[in-house]
Image 1 (tube, rainbow, N blue to C red):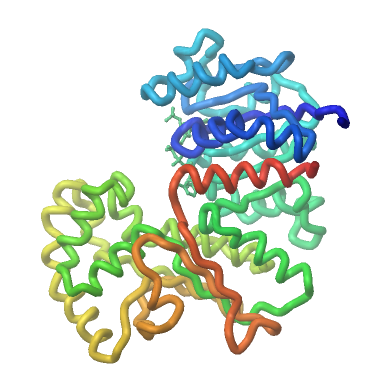
Image 2 (image 1 turned 90 degrees about the horizontal axis):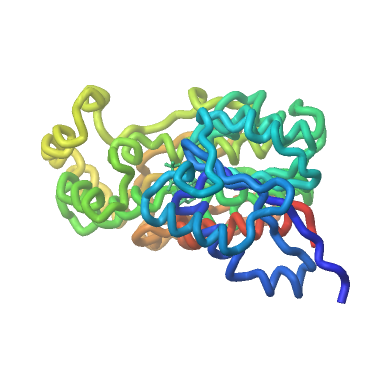
Length: 372
Ligand SMILES: NC(=O)c1ccc[n+]([C@@H]2O[C@H](COP(=O)([O-])OP(=O)(O)OC[C@H]3O[C@@H](n4cnc5c(N)ncnc54)[C@H](OP(=O)(O)O)[C@@H]3O)[C@@H](O)[C@H]2O)c1
């Protein structure tokens, strides 16, 4: 048997997805050894306040189980026997560690990881992102992370940086887009339903239920963010669409996107409770919209459309028997209309959220980023 290569990992973010990545790596140690000749060695893990570090030896599996138990208990990494505090900026932490060939994995939802990612990148470390923020803030940061010499005019850096789960979670949307682009095919249009939460809300509205009841239910079931306006405002979908647009070479920023907000801007000032208590006033407007669509054999879907260098995100009435119309619950769907995929688009559909499916996508990125 060929010798096993040890691959160092530094994991930023040990929340739902980060913990699942850690669990899945421990679970698949034999698979990675036998099929890929790899053993992952955690040289560091960090949450929002602390880090557990072992740059020289790596953390043994017992220590990693302690981290999982601690985080499952809702406690910070500073309480781990090897835990040290940090300021929220992981640059100084990474600077204290020099391990060639490290893969830095960002499973946070924070823009504060950007300086550490750029520092890791400058050092030649590989990077895997579940976090959309580094790719959707400054265009310059996007280029620095994804292009060989940091400009939009230099070759892509796909062998060192992966971000598959930033769009569609475990559904391979980014890989598919990059394969289409690499073949020289022309993308005419991308249509996507990228929000499980808004997918759920739209399919419940189709049953002619009041908007207020559906939103409150989604909130109580934990399908929405703690503030449901984070979903209803469309910004999460906008970040996903922006990643696809930038990956196609469109030099855009979030403010260039046309995004429909599902509630009026004056409701931004309310507390979460006050917002939830006052959304009945939107019910009639939504009942009219749903009724109008149903009368034409259509249903409403919250859709991102990318075509001709422009991105439009909002509610569309689509035929009930179309791929988007048939989508139910929290599934995601993306349709690539290209030169070679017509008249029917290339369609991907599947679970667009969930920590295990997302972690599996992160793990595939980790395995692929340096190759077996
Ligand atoms: N959940 C899904 O289904 C899903 C699907 C696709 C993509 N994603 C993306 O995956 C990422 C993680 O999602 P999640 O559901 O796991 O979120 P989460 O449960 O909120 O976990 C976020 C983690 O990041 C840590 N963190 C925050 N700021 C940090 C900093 N400055 N330095 C280091 N760590 C920091 C948090 O620390 P504390 O533990 O101290 O709070 C927490 O451990 C997000 O970007 C999300 O958009 C999630």
